[in-house]
Structures are given as C-alpha cells and as structure tokens.
Image 1 (cartoon, protein in one colour):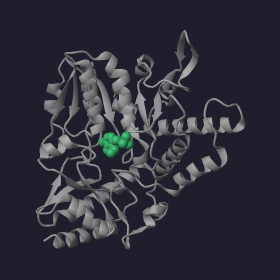
Image 2 (cartoon, protein in one colour; image 1 turned 180 degrees about the vertical axis):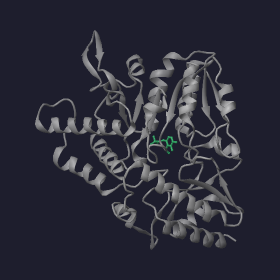
Image 3 (cartoon, helix red, strand yellow; image 1 turned 90 degrees about the vertical axis):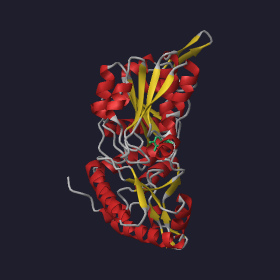
Amino acid sequence: SQAPDWAAVRRDFPLLERRVHGKPLIYLDSANTGQKPAAVIEATDDFYRRHNANVSRAVHALGTEATDAYEGARRKLAAFLGVRADELVLCSGTTFAINLVAYSWALPRLKPGDAIVVSRMEHHANIVPWQLVAERTGATIRVAEITPDGELDIDALYRALTPEVKLLALAHVSNVLGTVNPVREICREARRRGIVTVIDGSQAAPHRPLDIAAIGCDFYAITGHKMCGPTGTGALWARREHLAAMPPFLGGGEMIREVSFDGTVFNDGPHKFEAGTPNIAGFVGLGAAVDYLSALGMEHVEAREQALLAHATEALSVIDGVRVFGAAREKAAVLSFLIDGAHAHDLATLLDLEGVAIRSGQHCAHPLLQWFGVAATCRASFAFYNTHEEIDRFIAALVKVRRLLG
Ligand code: PMP
C-alpha cells in the first residue's frame, strides 16, 4: 500500500495544534502516552451520546448495541494483534495485564526453589508484580543483564534459563532505550525448556506490525493509551489452555455464569477475567484507534518513525557533550540522553518553556538507570505524527537551553 500523506495525518490530531507558553507545542513524549486522532475522540463521544448502556445484561436495544460495540472492539484488537478474540482479555492496561498473570498464573503455581527471570531493562510494571509473587511463594528473581549498547546479553540469558526457572518476563521494546528484543527466538528457547513467557508489548504494539501468534509466547500484554486509544484500556493475550486453567483474578458480575451460596460457575474464556462493568466507551475508542492505525498501515508507521529517529539521532549527536543511552541494532523511536553539566530535569523544564515536551526522570525503570549509573535521563520519544521540522526545532531549542545552563 501507499505511504500516507503525513502532513494530512498530523491534522487528524487536534491537540497537536495547541500552543504552550506561547510556542507551538512539540510533543515528544509519546512513549509515555500517545495523542489521539479525532476519530478516536469522536467514537468515544458518539458512544456516550447515542449508545451508552451496560454490556452483557440488558436485552434492550441500547444494551445490545453496547455489547456489540465492546465485543466488536475485542475482535478488531485481536485481528490487529494477530490473535483469536476468545483469547484476549480486555483490561485497563499493561499493568493490570501483567498483574493478572502474576496473581492468577504464577501465584498458585510457584514454590520455594523456583525462579523467575526478568531483564534489566524492564519497566516497573514487569518487575514489581514478580517481586510480590516471589515474596509470597518463596520463588527467587533472576536478572537477565544487558550489554553497554543496551541490548540483552542473549548468551547470559540462555545460561540463566536453568531448570528452576518457571517464568520469563521480558519487554518486547524497552521504553527507555528503544531496544527491540528478539522475542521470537527467546520464546522458542524458553518453550524448549518448558518456561512460560510473558512479553510486555506496551512499546511494540504502537510502533510496528505485530503478529503475537508468530512470537510464540504464552502471554502478551498491551496498553491502549500508547496506541492512539483512550487511557484505561489494554489487553492480555493468553494461550487458551492458560486461560482455562487459571483461577479468576477478581470476582464479581460479568465473570460468572451462575452464582449460588453453594458455589459459583465462572464464565468461559476472557470473560472469566473481566469482572465488573468495563471501560466500554474506552474500548469503543480503542477499536477506532485500531481502525485508524490499520488504515495508516503499521509498516508505514514503522518506516516513518524510523526516519524520524534517524534524523533525531544524527542531529543530537553533533551537540557537544551529549550522551545517548542505548545503541541497539534494532531500535524503536526513543532517544534517552544526557548533556554534560546539565541536569535532566533542568533541560526538560527549559525545553518546556520552548514548547517542547520531553520526559525527564527514571521512566519507571530504576534498575536500568542504576546500571547506567545515572539518576535520571531526558527522553524524547517520537510518533508518526511528529515532523522532521519539529525535530529541527527540538534540537535548536536544546542548543539554546544548553547555552542558558552554561
Ligand atoms: N511497560 C512498559 C514498557 C511501558 O512503557 C509502560 C508505560 N509506561 C508500562 C509497562 C505500563 O503501562 P500502563 O501504565 O499503561 O499499564
């Protein structure tokens, strides 16, 4: 298919027309949360204006419309991710998705002597749930280390996958370094050893074509708000046999077939894990987001972001005293950096006054920053709706604020 007209695509995002501090906004924080096209905002609005009702209970017309819209979003998202809809649990985001695996899969299974492997580059959402499980089961956590370029040390990882290891939790794409991990090869190795794999796809799904079934993992988590969708939407894909074997995480309405005081029969498939009224309007919006991204073509999104990344990497490298973190061979459009003699927060604060929104701090990845021996980094992250001109203005602003800081 033909590449989209990126200038027209950008005009789909109302927020990007804003000014901040009297300057045109340059939004370079999409790894944190993405901006929303009008189609997503309108789909959510339209649901509340014309279709709002609860799902799965009412037989009236609105109830049926709401259920169809919610289940329709599940089917769209499943097709987008390359999985079956009846294996896709809808939830509030990656954090919920990983906690669901931790509490429903890992907690009842792990024992003292078992081990969980997580990588050095994980987001706290893929560390802390495993620490909680380890504390309660007596299992231990092992860390798969990285190379100075910010890639996984694959040989060390495979050496760490000894018979005690029951679970491997790994980011598909690092939110700090942009590193794209070879999850397909790694999942194959893990599977050969009988190790269950949990892939955090938060930073992959928004930026590249995905085929989860081809990755061969056991669980894959995504979050909707980084892929043009509303906040509070996300999903966990799980192999059917895991979903069938796992006890429910939360109990309540929607997740049951029959309840009596003698016992309760749970619903099947993903619904068993969707207690209570879900974020229906949010998922309608996420369905629209998936339609939007599919119409752009994820291969075009990826190519566009790679071009922006190459431009920004090149432009940043000519600034004196700049240190970029992560030089993986395969990298998503994220640039973490520091400039000699300037604090990350000072840079970000002054850039904000120039209209440039970047993130500074530890990016929910304390162990990774500890490894690099820094207290914080600046992170500029790019999406297909950014422009080459914005990158030039970002670099010019960086040169200016750097001069201000002496
Ligand atoms: N994992 C990674 C790699 C992330 O970048 C994020 C979001 N910063 C999360 C997990 C958590 O996502 P959420 O807060 O949407 O659940």
